[in-house]
Length: 99
Image (cartoon, rainbow, N blue to C red; front, side, top):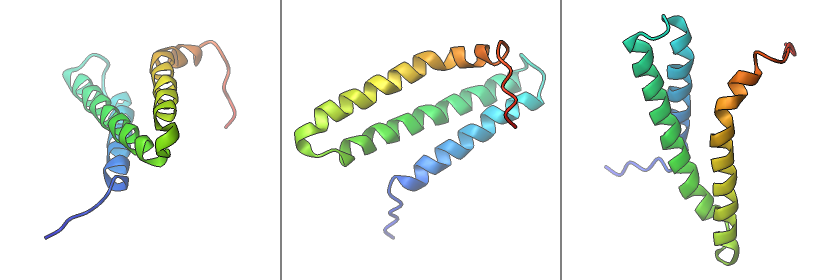
């Protein structure tokens, strides 16, 4: 049996599973082992998503500009990863009541 799902199904599965794991940590007491396990599972899913996007981005660029495209995508991914922990801290300082 030839099972060919491409990259879309694993990408969506990693994103949904990671989001469910990370959002469900709010339902439990902080510091419990279950919260740590859910957070690590969510982090694993986000890392898997990053790997899939990295491979996929290499396929969408033409050969002539592939290295520049991968380098630019990698820079923005690393900057986003470095800035992400501080975004949560900004939530307590600003009133974000758009909804």
